[in-house]
Each structure stands twice: as structure tokens, then as C-alpha cells.
Length: 482
Ligand SMILES: Nc1ncnc2c1ncn2[C@@H]1O[C@H](COP(=O)(O)OP(=O)(O)OP(=O)(O)O)[C@@H](O)[C@H]1O
Image (cartoon, rainbow, N blue to C red; front, side):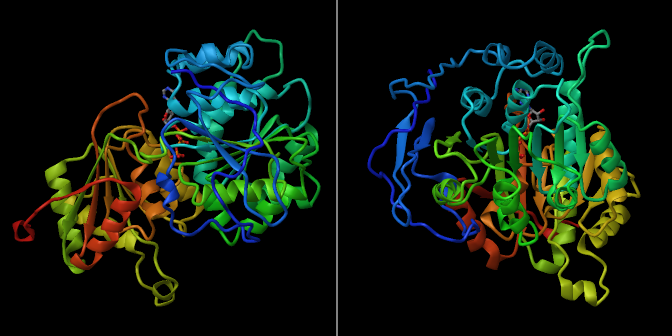
């Protein structure tokens, strides 16, 4: 199959949307599984009426005649074939050395669009390789001989920022003999020592910055970080960022006041973009993107990796720890993440032990005090959070007990099992938690997602099943076996 992108057409609306001043894309979505067919490319017209319907046009990418931004990528094309002429040779060599030889679906579809200079909404399954897609675009665009920040990647958490920085630096590493300046990558993340970053930015600005919003704004507001030379702006986990009341106003400023969409290429990425049509409409209206922004939506009818097997087990709330223990004994997972709800403010004020800590204590006392049971939550200090993740990354097997802080973007490809000790609050949270497993793009290895629920929660899970279109199999485990 060939993938083609045609320029925006001025056709009448196939979908009617109405302008909204709100930029919160929080309503639970049917749009995770939209009415689009797989392999459709959704391209917007540039004619946006002031307060009217959005003239959106849907093209079947396999049948649309080619236009001026024609690209043709065959299923058998290697990553090198797609990137050659755009991405520097030493980056391509490095990518191959670390095992990025064939493109994933989203890379195959998005890279030609990205190389054509269009703004883009990268909308594809968790673990599908969106990070590499936007990093390759950045490497194709920046000029490392220039002393200016030319690419900015905004992420919601320090953990995701460290991960993206690591991949970017790993790809950017130049051979020793090279006399050209390497692409330098700065991590401007919450919890870091900004004094060091200030001197770095003043002395020799890095080519690429990976930042969380609070640290970034601090630097931009003090005019230490200048965005004039910005060529690529990536907002990763975009729906999460727009839904965060702490981040949304700064994000809007970044998109409009601090830099202009005409001077940069703007990429939004996520596995979940609720109400994506309205979001695209707002992007154009608010001038966050240019009007010919492209929506690359990969596998819209199958928003989760197909290697996942979803299961649930019914259990009274006060016996979930024992149930989890039985599940761990019967599954014997190589590596697992156990998701626990965040501690409520009321419970914090009452001085209760955080749920992650009490589960950690229970598992350590039941399974033996083994060091490969770790935990991660917002209220831990940044060093402890980093230590937990780096221990998990050191390989071997692990059990990570975490709140939803580990649910977005964190890449732990060894994870084979996810346990929802507490049911996720929304369907989007279910999607991202489950997406922490099944993260080997070319593997068929079965991975398991198990929710421990009360009978009253069954209908909530059923709603998630309907919205995400998966089937959850019931496990029957007798608690008195403990
Ligand atoms: N072309 C490729 N070949 C082999 N592995 C790849 C390729 N591209 C990405 N990967 C691997 O796939 C995994 C998932 O990639 P990545 O973290 O970019 O996913 P994502 O789409 O950003 O997921 P999420 O939506 O959860 O953030 C990583 O371990 C990465 O190294």
C-alpha cells in the first residue's frame, strides 16, 4: 500500500463542528475509536469561518490522487530509505545501531508529512514510536553550526523528559573523528538546578531543549531562554497538557505569545486526543498551527496494541491486597507495574500512609524484602523518583507500584503485566496505563492487563470496553486459597 498526502482541498464540510472558546479536551471520548477507517489521513481546509462549522475533509490515503506534497512510502521501505536526504547520515547510522531499522506504522505515515514541513497532529497507539518520529524531524531541521535553540520538546513530567532527552542524546552522539558540532540537548525539567542551565543557555545555547512547562516558563519570562530561532515545537502528551489546570495557560502563551506558528513547525503528539476534530479546529483558529495542519491518525479503530490481553477479577475492596498476591503468584510476571490511585487531599491531611507505601509494605512482607519492588508517586522527591525508575531500567525483573505518574509516556519495554489495583478514573487513563506494556513494536509477545474490581465497578469497566473496543475476560480466583 502506498501512503499519499494531498494538499488541503477546499471542499464542503463532511463533519460539522462548532467553535468553542474552551481549549479543554476533557470530555470522555468516542473519538479514541473514531468513525474513520484505518489508514485514513485527515486533512483540514484552510477556510475557517469565524464562528461556523469546520470544513474538514477526509481523504483515504490509499486512493487520494497525489497533490503537491506528494509522498510515497511503501510498506517495505526501511527507516533509512524514508529518512535519507533529510536526516544526517551519522544519526541514521546510530539509529540502525540501536535497532531502529524498519519504521513503525506511525513513523512510516508521519515522517513524509513531517519532512514536507507541515504542522502535524501525531495520533497513534501507545508504544508505537512517536518519539523517534518527531526526533528524526528535529534532526532533519536543525543546523548544529548555529548557536541557538532551534527545537523545543515540551513534556508533562520530569520522568518523560529524562527519557526523551536520553533517546535524543543517544541518537545525536557523533563519532569522535567528526569535526562538526554535535546537536546538543538540554533537559530543562522540574527539580533540576536551573542555575547551571542559565549559564549554559547564556554561554552556548543548546540546539534542542526538552522541558517541562514550569521550568521553561521561568526561563522564558526572565528572557534567559529565547524562542526567536525556534524551528520545531513539539508538545508531547498534548491532551494531558491541555487538561492540566496548572499548565494550560502557560502552554497557550507558548503557542501564541512567546512564538509564532508561522516561524516554526508545530507537532502535537499523543495516543489519545479526545475530540480531535475540535482540537484541530482550535489549533487553526488560535494560530497554534498553520491552517494546513495534518492529522496523522494511525489505527484509529484499534487504539491499543493488539498483543494485550485484558482481564478482570471481582473482589471486595478490603481484600484486594490478597487478590493481588494470588495474581502475582499465578502469573509470575517477569516485570509488572501495579497502578494505585493517588492519595486524596483529605487522606493526606489526616496523615494516612500513602496507598503506594502501604501496598509496598504489604508486598515486601508477603514476598520477602526483595529490593526489586519499587514505588513511584508525585509526592516523592525528584531524586527518589529518578532512583526508582533508573533501578527499574537496569533490567532484570521488577514490580513497580505507581500512581498515574508512570502512566504517560514512560517507556519500560520489559513490562509484561499491568495490574489496576484501583480502576483508572477515566477511559483515557485506562488506555495510557495499559500502554505501559506491549511496547515492542515488532513483537507479538502477549502482555496482560488485569483490573481488580468490585462488582459495582464492573459497569465502569464495561464502559471502557465499549469505548476502546476490547473484550475483558473474567478470571475466577478463590480468595480463601491465601
Ligand atoms: N523503528 C523502531 N524499531 C524498533 N523499535 C522502535 C522503533 N521506534 C520506536 N521503537 C521503540 O518502541 C518503544 C516505544 O516508543 P515510544 O516511547 O516513542 O512510543 P510512543 O508512541 O511515544 O508511546 P506513548 O504514547 O506511550 O508515549 C521504545 O522502546 C522505542 O525504543
